[in-house]
Image 1 (cartoon, helix red, strand yellow):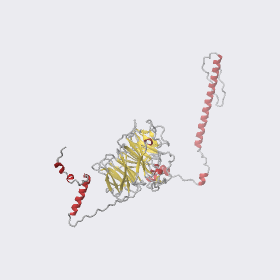
Image 2 (tube, rainbow, N blue to C red):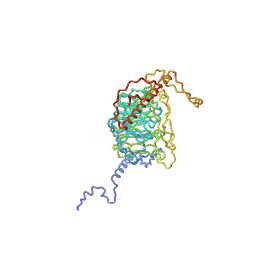
Image 3 (cartoon, helix red, strand yellow):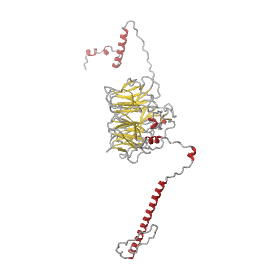
Image 4 (cartoon, rainbow, N blue to C red):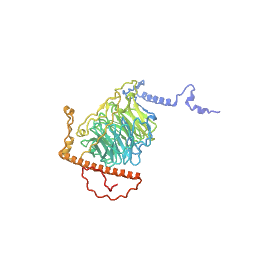
Length: 564
């Protein structure tokens, strides 16, 4: 084989056989470094300085090592026909007792309710909650009653349901109450965090209605949005309302006054945006930029138009749902169609929203639900639990844990969390009162209580103002002596007593006549049986002779001579 010497001399590496050349990647980096130093050395009075070692300070946080773990398929829920609606909703709601998922249903809308112990493959004929005439768009569990759930549908009706303990044994079609107000489909239902039986609904008619579910009437109606309402969120005490709209604005509203306190453009993109209140009053939003890049921002209520921080994430087109944990100040971003869950920690130090980690799954998610802190397992240091809905019909359970060596209760991970007790009644909240949510300790774990039935008392629309005031007067608590005394017998009025006595006497007379007829028929049957036994043909019946009416007190059961 002949080798051209001229070709060999072209390569510097072969001109000096004793010199070994570094790889190309290292060589390029070295050349860049030498050229940088050479430029500095050409400056007058410059001297090569020794390289200084850089130290990176690691942020101190107990949630830096949060990681997610998907449970086995046997511990998840399979064969669920998740709704194929294009509405931007999570399609899933969870509480410590039940898991509710919006499903496909023929002839209307429905959702399935499963107890947490019913894992595995769900039968196709499992009972549903199906009373809507159109597809169900949103569902929400009551935070103060784990057996009550509200649903909004395309049939413009909001229904409130009572789920029995242990789940459904047959399809439920009768709700506790129907809430009819909206003229177009209802795509958002949201319970009040502190007031009992207060429910917010928003429809495609750009209206917001705040209901008292206990009476089935509208307390407040808000008409301050020019376009479709994307999301709504209460603040920590339930005194303010935060909404996002199709006009790209976020609004902070005082619902009892019906006034918009502040508004600003959240994200410049035309796609749907979301906004939530954080525990200490800050506002966290997700949306799209003008170039359709997904982004999130953190703002203060006093300056909504000047975000503290705005960060672009990626260029996906799925709407991001921010799920917030007020106990740990962690925010989980779950995008529709994504296969990842990103989680961040909000702190007072810059950059204020710290990226922690990303949980990766192979399948895209169609919906997601977050378990309240009451339903987390404190023995395994579980700080969050998610229920992901896949397109294949699998509801995957994901547990977020903080690894700890000790098996004792970790008080720094579990401060007092929201309980299932209400701080106010609906009337107290409507009157202007505010209160902090009731909290509870998770030490020893949470045990779900027995179900309490939701009672709905319809108010009389024709009642006079005096009657309404009388109904609102609270009953006085009895004294101890009156409480221990036996109940006194009620004395009915004389007119009522006379009417009851007359009805009783008429009833006795009717019973006496009926008894007389029965005795006569028994005697007649007895005579016919005796004739058949004797082998004689029964004589032709003749018309009975008219007999005089018997006196009322005559109990003679003898029959007439010509009567058989």
